[in-house]
Image (cartoon, rainbow, N blue to C red; front, side):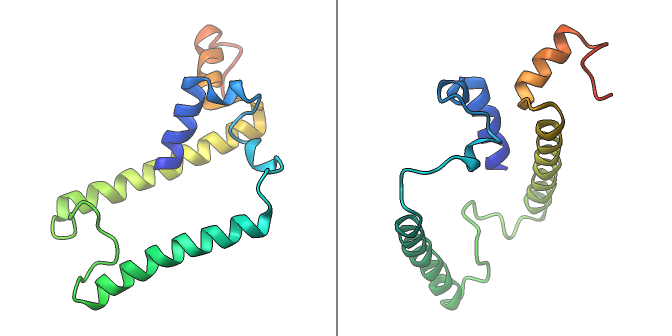
Length: 122
């Protein structure tokens, strides 16, 4: 869900244009951080976080991840699952659109709003 919001926020804010990238091109660029340094930092940070989460689970917390304390509220759990599924469908749409049109979601929406008969799914 955060990834979909990040794609939209980067395109709406113009951050993607400032760097000359579209959201689907950023992963193909070379990073200034060496791969093994990045991997070591990532493993250390996420290893510590996962260890803390596991220790809480062993102490009797029946849920491994519940930052908003919604584990006991069935309605909120249902909403969380529905929002997650909607975000996955939205990301799949963004991905297909980027492969076919080489445009981001906001740019595609602007083109469609300007000329709906010529710029559409067909």
